[in-house]
Amino acid sequence: MNYRRLALIGFFLTQTGLQSIAQQKNSIGVQLVDVKAGTFVMGSNRGKEDADESPVHDVTISTSFKMSATEITNKQYEAFDPGHNKLRGKNGFSLKDDEAVVFVSYEEAVAFCAWLSKKEGKIYRLPTEAEWEYACRAGTTTDYNTGNELPAEYQKLQHTNRTPVPVSLPVAQTAPNAWGLYDMHGNVEEYCYDWYGAYVAGAQTDPVGRQTGVSRVVRGGSHNTPVRYLRSANRQGMLPNDKQWLTGFRIVQGALPKTTAIGAELSPANTMQVSQQKFSWNKITEPFFDVPVVYVVKPDSTSGIPFYKHNHCPAITWCPNGDLLAAWFSTNAESGREMVILASRLRAGNKKWDTASMFFCVPDRNTTGTSLYYTIKKEHCII
Image 1: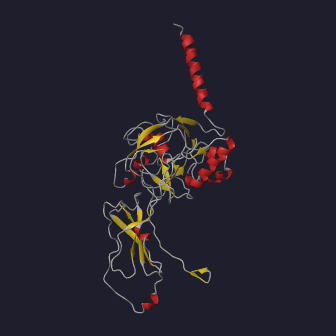
Image 2: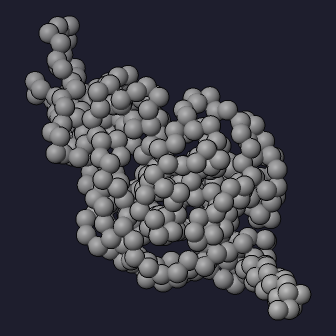
Image 3: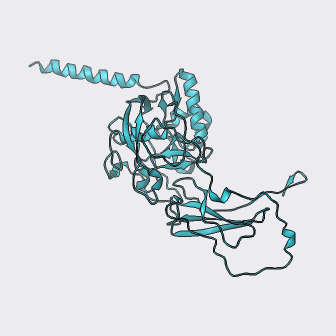
């Protein structure tokens, strides 16, 4: 047997493989991985704090696409926005060329994709939430694409740090998943295309989220975050113009699915049937005292409204229509990411507060402080 000949063939095949990978890199050095079409099971049945991962449903990704093997790095992003260089190392995060870019907003990530699309004459965009989970799972059905546990080498300070502890964020330092994608669990969170909203039941093809919303979906979890938020099914959100040390993005090459987005979610009860009749507070001329009236009225467990054991930090104001409006946070722990802001109205003339309903929520974010205000226009001034 000609071992030298076999060795040369092996060397040639290796070099051919490397060349093939090199050809997958685009003009700014982003390595792109082919993700084939297919069907998977999206979500989880964990319930409670993770109820937004339900209902579990089959999703078909009908068209193949290319996804960046890693999160976009500082060097790659700054080919688009050189001024971002001044944010390198802010709060101790992401200083080097090969670290995942952070301190970018959703809007800036979309602008990067538009710039790259124009530069190359190809369509670049953020992945849909369904594409992201499909690519992350890479055929797995477990909590992580590594199984039901995330190995220690993938973890970077996976606990709550209210004051973030700096950690290095270079990409591709651990093994990729079965489809060749790195850092799908941790390192930094990644923006998705979709507006955040509740899942709907039933099999779907190429879902693209809601028509509108408050926050955009982010996936994958990050450093300085408990490890369970790094699961394949976990859903988080970010305000589109916000930017901080936790969140970056990766990109997709390929047209956005033409699927119609799901309609916006129903407005919460505290915003419905609100009287627009101005109330005359001048009628009340004497101090009034009464026994305490409970304003936290627990919603029915079947309502889908998150309600936790710790309800705290209320804000309350009077409204021009005579209503009183109260808002507070509901959570299991002061530092918990399950925290939501609930609200209730004591409508003018009523003796009982409405049942608590959602007021504000950016999923899996700790939004402790609450304040309420309204403006009155008088002679073209706001007072």
